[in-house]
Length: 457
Image (tube, rainbow, N blue to C red; front, side, top):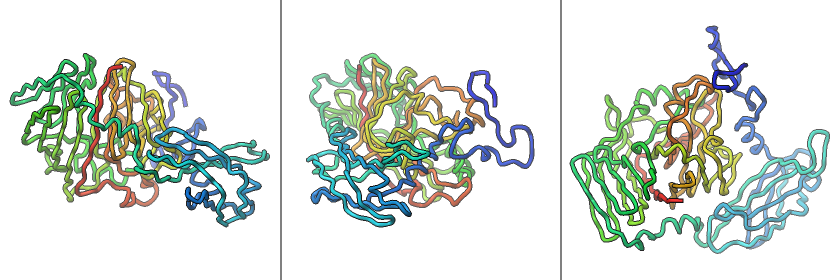
C-alpha cells in the first residue's frame, strides 16, 4: 500500500508484479476492504443473518408473526424490537414491541397495532436491537432489520402521482416547432429541446436558460462488468453490447393542443452485428417542459441477456445533489438489496460511488419511485408509475470498465445519470454458479415509461 499521485490509497493485487500464477484481485475480495472498511457484502451478510424474521403481518388483527432463528435464546431475553411505518419514504409512526416471547426456532404472533394510511406505498420496518450489554456488543446494538409491505387503497407513491398528473396543460405558452432532415426543435419561452432524428433521442435540452443535458442522451444496455460478470463478460463483448449505437428509421411529429408527440422507430445495434433491440419510442413534450417517455422494446432472442436497459444522461457537472425515493442508503440491485430499505435519501454524487478496488458497476439503487438531481439553480426529476433503478456517478461506465485500479480513475466532465428499466442482478459468478434466470434481464418484449421534469431552482 502507498499513495498514488492523486492522493488516493494505492493497493496492488495478483499480477501487478508480473508474477504467475495469481488470482487477480480475488485476494482482497473479502467482507472488508484492506483498510478494514466494511464492504457492501458485509452489510448484506449481517442483515441476511439477522436473529429473527417476520413471517406475516396482519394489520387488521394487529398481529406480526415472527420466527426466532436463534438456537438457544428466547427472543424476549435477547432482543428489543422497534418498528416504523414508512409511507412514500417518510416515517409516519414509530413504536416498540414490548416483549416477544418466542422460544428458539419457533414462530409466534406478537401485537403490533398501526394506523394504515388510505393511500401511498407503505412498509412496516422492523429493527432488532441487542437488549443487554455483552462482552462484545453494547446494549442497543443494531442486529438487523427487515420490511413488510402494507396494503393501502392504491399502493402508489402520492408524490409520484402528483408529478405524473397533467399539470403541463395549465401553462398558457404555445410551441414553436422547427424541423429539417436531421433534427426537430421544440421550444417555448421556457425551454428549448433539440431532437436528433438519426438516433431517436434528445441531443440538447435547456430549461429557463439553464442546460439540462450537456451531451446527447443515449440508450444504455452496457455496464462496467463486475467481478461476478466474469462468466458472461466475453459473451456480452462478443455481442458488442459495449459498442452499441441507436439508429432511427422514421420519425413522426404530432402537434396537439397541449402537447407535442414524437414517435420514432429505431434499433439499438453495433457495427458488425444484427439488431439487438427494436424500439418504438414515444416522446410527449408538455407545455411546462415535462417529457413523458414510453419505450416499447423487443429484444432479439439470439443475443445473451442484457446487463441493463435504460437511458443515460450527461448532466452539468455542478448538478451533484441527489434526492431519491427508493432502496438506500447503500447500493442495491435486484438480488443484492438486503442491506437497504425504502425511504427518501439525499446525497452528493461523489458519496454515491462505491469505490471497489478493481473498478466496476456500482452505486445503483433499486425499486425507486423518483430521483432528482440538482445544483441549486436547475434540477431534473425522473419519476415513474412503475419503479425503476438509477445510478448517479462522477464516472462513465467506459472509464470504470477500462481501469484496473480505483486510483487510476478519471472523473467525467459531466454528472452521469443512468435511469434503468432494470439491471441484471449481481450474482456470484466469480466463484459460484452463474446468475439465476429470474435475475437476468432477458425479456423478449417490455415497456419502459418515465417522466422527465426539468425545473429551475
